[in-house]
Length: 530
Image 1 (cartoon, one colour):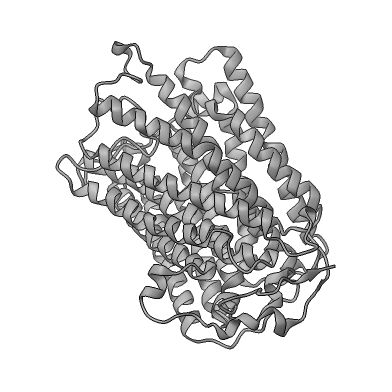
Image 2: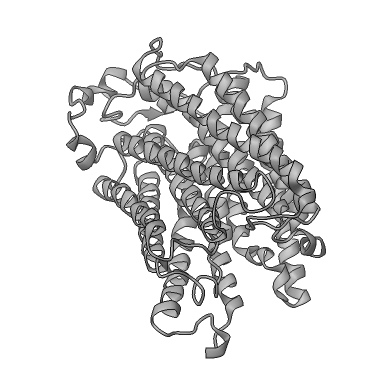
């Protein structure tokens, strides 16, 4: 990285303007730390909400036959669980981390567009209120899967589809505003001397993610609008009887949906690239190759969308093209994993909670990557498609990938946010409960899928009963483990030994040069980077 010289008191002459008091502080705030906090709490509430829906799904699947819920309600749970976890838990958590950390990492006083920042957060609770309220409408909420394939979402969907479309539009607007803010902040507000190749990797990964968001969110907006007009206004974009094409829906949706997967994992790479060097007490191995690998993944993510559609009857040439492109994307991802392992190699490693989550991320995300490579092989995908193998694959990527990295980040930066050290013992209990239960939950799903158990179905053949019981027990254990996380965070906010400015030996970066807790205004005069 680089050496940082700055006159500390001058850098913090802003903190006699403390935070305003009372409820309106949070409603009207334009401070990047407050908005980051709002995003993080919102995403945690959504995480628990989506988790409760997952518990309904796993309780129903505990035994064969229909136990607890109607098939239609089961479908609503699988749909809204996916939407809430993707748009309500993972993405806002990364946006919260971006808000908190990017200005501190680049030596900026705040985000570039603070009022827009406030607005981009406050429209989110309304979007999710609209989405969740659709579950209470006559005919129920969205029941067509989080990918809302036509004609399930057009000809056969409940009337609440209009609310679903409206809420997706609002989430998209929020994402685009957040992304514009990130780009403008990073491009214009870096401290003097902070050249592009001195940026922390978390900042790089978020910059690339922000461009992805701006590129694909309008595609999602377009496809949900076409669903809306097909259902309510008599168009037939996706209705073959009116000259439309239902498979076209999948092409448009996945052109958004596959880059979206990388939107949910690239910031993770930045987090892990901060934590692994800190606890290995070494520089990150291959910094520039990590930057280029991230950019390569982003570019390739636009060339692989149809690997979700191998069974739709595409021409063989197209199947070959998407198969090879998908395999190719494993190369830059492999570069990252290699670099993290090389960073740890012969390092002076200590195993605090953030590092435990980071190591679990590397191992378990790699399992998700390998099953993704299996799914990329067209003839084999015909066997795996729409089975629990796919469910296992993307949960290894998004739960042990994205969510574990968010937890690693929370433990790593909590002392900087709260000014207190978290309870290390409780943190480790949370880690071990989570890592054991998550594997009991998702690993057996690979075998259910290989044996042919279809996804999104509330009932199943008797031979899958024993494995599903094990999976459901893992699911309940994983859900309950997250309450330990809540306890750790609340305890850390209230009490705990006071954290120094730099609580971790090997931590590098501008955010560790300011006191803990970070003052309300961090850099009123920009630091000099030499």
